[in-house]
Length: 197
Image (tube, rainbow, N blue to C red):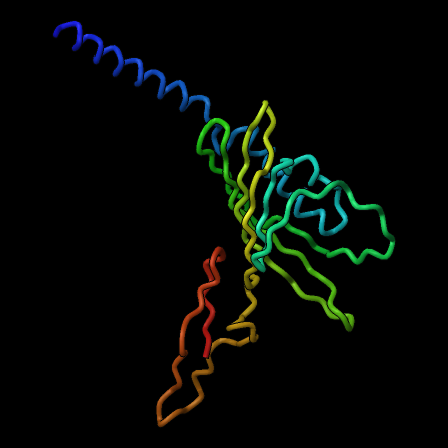
C-alpha cells in the first residue's frame, strides 16, 4: 500500500515538472518567432501590391485556405510569371496581428489587413479583411497550414447590407417623432458601430 502511495506521489511530481518544462518551450507573444510571423504576414499582405513573393515559403504543401466567398484554395504552385499588364492594388497594409501560441509547435495569428483596388471606370475602393492563420512547426520550420479570410467593412466606412449610409438623420420626422435606427450593425474586428436605418 505504501509503495502505491509513493508511486502516485512520484507521478504527480513528475507531471508537475513536465508541465513546467513544456510551458517553458512555448514561445511568447514577444518572442523572435512571433515577430518573425508578423513580418511574414505583413509580406504576404504586401504581395497584393506587387511586393516580394513569400507564399511559397510560408504556406505548407498541405495548406488549405478559405476565401471570403467560402471557396477553398491551396498553396500556389509557384510565383506567377511577371506580367507588365498586372494591375496591382495600392496602399497594402497589415492593420493588426495578434500571435497566440497554443503549444510549442502550434500558433494562430489573428489579424486584419487592407488595400485599395482599382475598379472599372477609374474609381478605387478600399477593401478590408479580418483573418485567422494557423501556423504549425514541423521539422523545425514554421508554416501556415490553414487560413480563414473574412471581408468586412473598412473602419470609417458606413455600410448597411452593402449600401453606404450616413449617421442617423435624427431630423426626419415620422408620426411626430424622430425616426429611430432599425438596427445596429457591428463591424467585427474594428470595434465600430454603424447606424443603419
